[in-house]
Every structure is written in structure tokens, then in C-alpha cells.
Image (cartoon, rainbow, N blue to C red; front, side, top):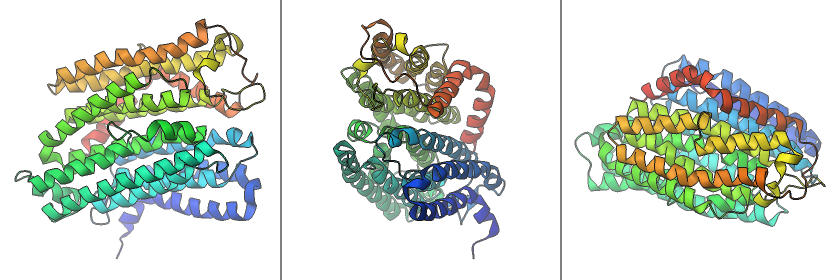
Length: 478
């Protein structure tokens, strides 16, 4: 019989499930006319789920006999996921209404994807891990191909589905190998089994499992879907893909590495170090020649995941705390940058995605150019912006763990990455003006990008709060 405490531990997921089902019926009965109402109610549902996190924490870390973890780590990750999901919903109406394609299914799909992501970061067992991951992925495949009449969107959805299915198969094969050689699917049980040494079967299972997770966080060499899907999917969907699922995948990889594969630290650290270095290098170099800003943001996300994984590679509580702090700052930078990209519209209000179209933006839209410059400088890690602090934390954790060479490589590669961020700023401020954008931006986009820019500029005031929250999250895993 399911106990009361277990149900309270998954209260955020229960709220999202109930909200998603009710709003799906509202969308079915109300049709496209109900889009705005469903949008607002979806954001409200995410806010209620966020408030329920304190209730789920109060009932102890384990629920459903260890299948689910309701600890400080999952609460931290879920807060980021729900915030990013709410932003992706709020940014969508103006984009979809341009072509009269506003659909109430969009926020409902994000709610269901958020349930899956919540299960991912709370997983205490390979079964919960897989169910959560698939629930998140199924909604994401539909979101990628959301604009059915658009060839690019349909192609993005198909590519994501085919490659995502392959990655799920790889992950499932790794999970089955770990179960076969350890005799359990529980993270705690796997860790106990590996205490006596890691067998070849367990090692292969670990490699396949981490390969599947690397695909979900779009880390090299499993990044091949990212640029095409980011470019082809509708921009609000790309905003979502670049933030919430990224947090869920990185948080899940951290939990699996620390809780399930802890005794095999020396084995998985080598994999994580390779993936981190390859992601940083490819993300920096491949973005240089991009002409589409969404493709550039795709390579930027690959680059940023590499930096975040440096914290995990350290394998210490400080390293995990640095990774979670990095993801929190990364979400703010990404949502803010995409709020700017959503304002890239020609005089007729149609979306524009070329970097060349930003030329002379500092003259026609001073506020938008300043905000985008803040996000680009921050992603490049230029002090005193908050993005610098994110990189400093992971490098500091790596040096403290004796990985000075890894930190040095990361610092050197961040200089390469700074080139393409600075190229955008140079285009906006120094190039000959291109055709002017639409004179006025959307109110919601302006509010979100202003709020994100303020956080990036004044973020150091939040440092005590962020450090305390990320340290508590990391401590709950060790």
C-alpha cells in the first residue's frame, strides 16, 4: 500500500499531472480560442508545483521504497526546470500568433515534459530514470515538430525522434547490463555491488548509460542533433530545449555518477573529462562559422554543457555545487538571450534569424542591443558579469580536486568561445546598419529579458543565496 509520505514527496508531479490533464480537456473543448487561458493556467500550475517543493522536502529523502528521491538536490533542479518551462510558455504567444498558429497544446506538452524532468532529477532507480526520461522525450519530439506546416520544424522533429530513439536504446542497454551484473536497479544497490571492484560487464553498462545521458544533454560526441533541432524548431521551443531539459539531463547525470556509480569514480571520471573537453572544444570552434543565431546558440549550449561537466569531473561536493550553480546561471543567460532573439523581426513582424540582420541594432533598438550584449559578454565569461562567476566556480572546484590541467584547458578554450560572442556584439555596434527590425518588441519579452539582464549584471548580490542552495543540493548526494 502506498503511504501518505510518498505521495507528498511527489506532490509537485501530482500537481503538474492534474493540471496537465485538466488543461488538455480545456484545450480540446475550447479549441484555439482557449490558448491564452491555457497559457496562463499552465504557468500558474508550474508556480504551484514550485511552491509544493517545500512540502515534498519535508517528508524525508526517500519515497516509494527508494524509487524516488525528494531531497535538496532534486528540489534545486526542479526549481530551475519549472522556472525555465514557465518562461518558455510566456514567450510563446506572440511568436505563434504571427502566423495565426497559436495552439493551446503547446503549454500542455511543456507541463507533461516537466513531469518527466521532475522524475529524472528525483530518480533513485534505473526504472524511474528511464520512465522520466522517456516522458520528457516524447513531449519534446512533438514540440520540435510543433509547426506542422513548416518543413524545417517537421524535419527537426523527425531527426530528434530518430536519434532520440537510438539514444534511448543505448541507455536502456546500459541499464540492462548494470542490472544483469549487479542484480539490482536501485542506485544504492548498484553502488554496493561496485564496492568490491568494477567488473567488465559493469564497466560496459556504465559507458552505455553515460552515452545515453550525454545525448540528452547534447554533449560531444552525441551532439549531432542539436544544431538542426535548435534551428528547425519554433524559437520558443528552442528556448525550452536550451534550458529546462538541459538542467534535467545534467542533474540526472550528476545523480547517477555520484549515487549509483560512486565507487567507480576513477572509471566514470575519465569518461566525463573526455566528454567535457570535447564539448568545450567543438562548441567553441564549430560556432565560429555560423550565420544563423539559433545554430550558434546550439553550439553555445554544447560548449556550456562542457564547462558544467568540469564540476562533475572533480567528483567532490564542491564540484557538484559548482555544476548546479553553473546550470542556474546558464538558464538565466539562455532564457534572456532567446527573449532577445524572439524580438528579431522584420518590419512586417516575421521572425529573422540571421546574425547579419543584427547589424546596426545599437542605433535602431538601443535597449535590445544592450541586453543582447550583456548576455553575450556573460556567456563569454567576461567579468564582472554573472557568467564569469559560473566559470570561476567550476574551474576552482577542478583545481581544488587536483585537476589543474583540466581547468587550464577550459580557461584556454573559453578564449576561443569568446570570439563568436564578441562577433555578435561587433555586428550590432560597429557594422553598417541592415534593414531595421520591427519598431516595438513584445511586452512579455521585454519584461523577461530585462529581468534576466538585471540578474546577470547584479547577480553577485544573489551569491550567498545561490551558494547556500547549491551546497545544500550537493551535500544531499554525498
